[in-house]
Image 1 (cartoon, rainbow, N blue to C red):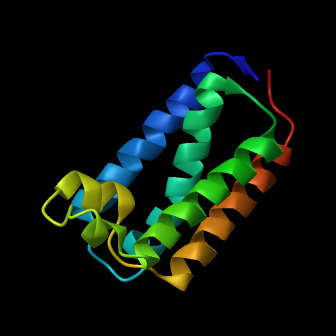
Image 2 (spheres, helix red, strand yellow):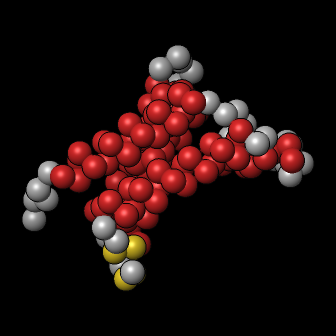
Length: 124
């Protein structure tokens, strides 16, 4: 695995991060915040990984999906309470606080979108 810096993925990371912050701070609905946010977070992490690592699309996408599932599993185990981090806004934001099968489905949709988007030829 080689390190690199991809300006393309870096800019996508910034755009997706800004979108996630906007959703978290400004959107309080029943669709975008709970569903689109989870789809975008998989894409955000993927773009962040691809900013610095020169690895295949499939390896990066599968790694991000696995990581997302791991975080959701930690929510299932109520890891925030186990680690006594209930008062930590950072921990609650990064790890989350409630397990949802729907979240797993949204992560899979984000993973699938990555594969579809990355299958299009790149313009040089």
